[in-house]
Image 1 (tube, rainbow, N blue to C red):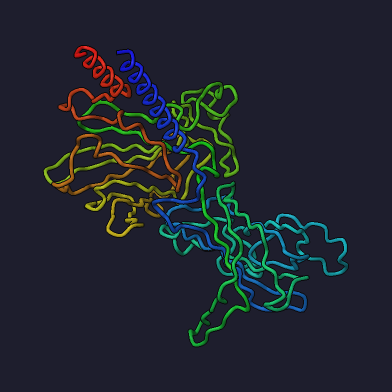
Image 2: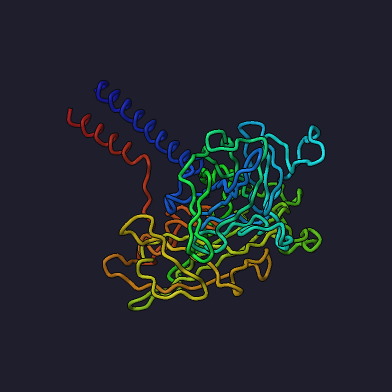
Length: 455
């Protein structure tokens, strides 16, 4: 009998250890991945194309273009910052459509002084309104780079650079190294420059094709974990069939603690609210409305109505940041019924199908000049719309939280969802099922008692 109980004790110990290990691995896999891979946009990246268009006595002239091939992630103001390290002792004689942030030490040059002599220059876009003689095509947007799906006409940004003290042939030119892209903060990781086939250009009359002397590409991919250590948005849920409103998880994006005293969080009822809110600036630090979740943005999904052949959902996006508004915002929502979306009110819609035969993801964004601008926190700091879905008899159900989204992105960042066991349940489902981690342990103990009784 002692042998049976000792064996059972070892089994219980191993089971508890294994369960704890699984829980630890699951918790660690939630927010610690640094891989720059997005399952909803697996091929999304920013490609930097460097075209040498002519040779000069001591170098070359190149047009550098950034293409945003991400479907829904864009670069907002104050815009992108591009950096690299020269392979030799190159200098930048002049630029159009962009400028370096520092000139560096050009003291050895007399007369004609270069635009930049730094070994590791940093380039930014010029602002709108730049004189025409300093512009080139696709420049001067203040570094704003829209997503490929939402605004393809503004998904590219270019500048021209004249490089000196460099090679003057394809064999003597050395490609720059250590490319960095900030948008405007961290998040992007750039690979090495790779020489590719020279880019071909079609003349305005479309009767002649020219090509670059030399071309290399750099690919940069995004990781939300590298961009910020905490999430930036959360999701709340409600339904017509249950009075429970499931709020964003507590401390989803941070906790209040003593943040009220430090000024990073202000109550909407505070008498000092007007004086606490800074001027609207893209560089202003976040000043959030005090909430239990402390997220700058909340997306609320409400299952509103049920018809015989259809069902309706209302989506509301609320901004809790008093110091920042969002232009050209977008949502990406994953739900199995998007293959039967019948009507959408006051939002634009495009299905995202990264995998053949699977249409369960939608990109939503505001209508131009109507609701494409999400104001700062306050009475006007929200946008909303409703979606009408056709029911599929083989899959549709209100049970087990099926009517709620699987995941939601806001401006390309994954939002924190409530735990599944907190979702609103149908009234006739009775008590929520409770799954105990120690149920297997109790089964083992029962088996031991049975064996002991029959010995």
